[in-house]
Amino acid sequence: MIGSYDRIQQLLTGSQVEKKGEMLRGSPESQVEGIISFLDRHGFLESKGRAKRDNRFDK
Image (cartoon, rainbow, N blue to C red):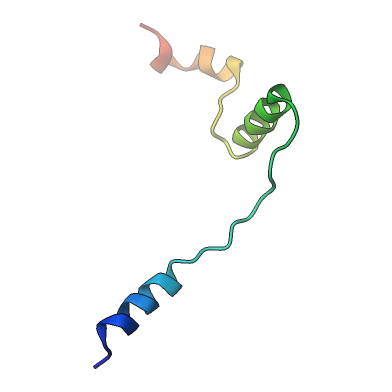
């Protein structure tokens, strides 16, 4: 049986995650462009044409 200190140490060690990506630098405008580009590349944004064809957005 392992002690509580060792269990906590294992939990903390297991939760360390290496971050990937890049830090956005520059003007607020260029940072916004970088964020929007990321969201678009990963499918979080819909094109305007698709949103117009999608009936979910009609009221």
